[in-house]
Length: 97
View 1 (tube, rainbow, N blue to C red):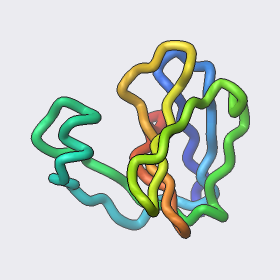
View 2 (view 1 turned 135 degrees about the vertical axis):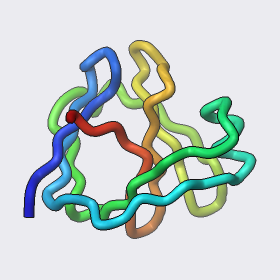
View 3 (view 1 turned 180 degrees about the vertical axis):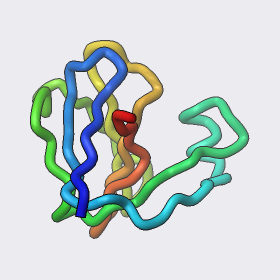
View 4 (view 1 turned 45 degrees about the vertical axis):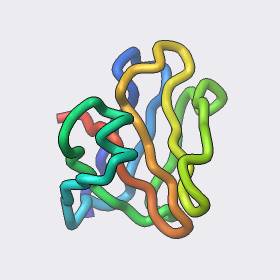
């Protein structure tokens, strides 16, 4: 189990994932297309219990994207980095590589 760290482009929001993600998927839904301005979005789902915001959580802005999901973004720069939050998982984050 290798922890993964990441954050928003401006560095205000930082987070860690306790375990290396085991899957990557491409989402072609209209909501993701509209949010990113691309035909698809690469996303990495992780268990909610493995995800922790370590810095700048108070700077996150959110909106209800659907009945079961919310979308979050950095309120300082409102860039394309985004988090999708469902009942049991979080996906769509940027990782440091």
